[in-house]
Length: 289
Length: 322
Image 1: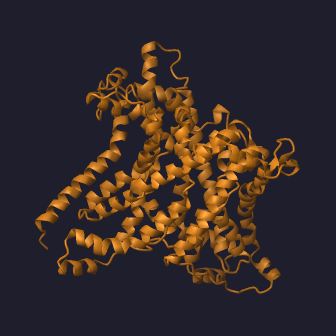
Image 2 (image 1 turned 45 degrees about the vertical axis):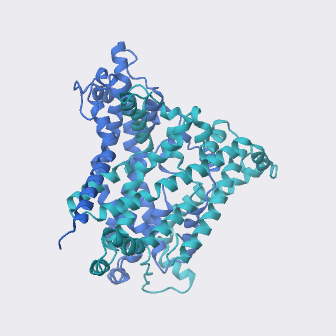
Image 3 (image 1 turned 120 degrees about the vertical axis):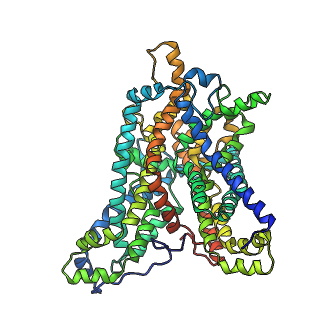
């Protein structure tokens, strides 16, 4: 089909507009990336835009040698791995029985779960409960209070329900137990949904900082996001205090940039997988168009 | 993306039938005891971390003492709520919450729709994918990182934005400490972070539009604009309405993390919202009962809004959120 002159112009303008938009979305990252590889002098004189000036990897060397960065990076990795594993296991353990018609009381339990999406005790009573459970300043405070998410349970329950009951029946004929069916038939079939909620959890854990702000004062337990906040927002990092003035100055801008890039990297590495699953994930849970 | 591709959608909830429906409870428990057992940790989780705090809101009507705990502290009735009504800071915070939320709704809501409409016109899959990938990216970064990038870009001394202003002959602006700019920055950064992500659902809706409608419209001589007005927009209107209503239900949820990361004492008057206020007064000054009362008011209003909105959504013929 031939396009009219107006349509041709529309398509050109549309391509241009989206290209500009895409560049706008990307440009802050490129700017920070360029800064992280530039010398302090070049940054301060405003020479760095989208390409490193006076190329140096010193900022990265410093960041990776900073014990604070390494420690908080390790905390973030640990909480992401442990938190995701626990969350996925507990979600399946609760969602599977709730998806079976022969389990009594399941709609009442489901209602109680969904109700927590609509109403909550709020920040202060939750804080007091966690305090009275003596979870403050422990690693567990990252893992346990966020272990389950009502929305993820709804997703998993719906997925489990969509697995044909005949599969389960024939397995039972062959003598499989309830948990045997769950582990050997249901879980392998549910891998796409499990991967989705695992990724939801992993990104959430990696980016989380509110729990650390609320419940943790011990600096050896601080996750990467808190380290970044202290570095970027208030410049309270102890980095470089023994170095010369020139090196202290380096600490300010390019170090921030390098730390930001280093903490974004893990997300960027899993991004291709993320995108594939998340786009489906949001479709499961959202209102259908 | 086609409907229900790969994963099932919420609506396809067909209960799986058991092989031997055990009628008596005892027999049922005996047959499926292991499945009842594995639910226990999850149920305990919800009781302890969700329902115990709900019961804990009674301290909004008490004078909570750390030593006495939830149950044993003295009742004070509605004292904390009366104090709230006399507190000018509370009005300021409530107003900020509603204003920031409405600004985000007004400026942020059309963004994903426009982006999806533009992307939908692109024929080249490679080009479309590339732009989409760039657009989703900021969604996956924490507010700390986005905040760090903003501090970097907006810094009065070394930031790129002020560099540009200086180059154009303007005075540098300390954006993040300027009450005149703070709300705009909240709105802009929120759009930048979420617009691509928000477009996904509209793209899905657009993919569901019957191509024959466009063919018919072209036959009738409709140009691009007429096609948009008479085919595209009516086709995705219910999606737009439902998402709009859902946003209205959450008008008191401004996004604690974003404000927490970006604000500072210079902009409290325009940036302090209910949740940051509850945090500062509750945790910072240990005023547990008063801040619980403030938080409870927010939760109750939110619950009422969500229930009303859910009714409205069901009226549009869609499934609600619950």
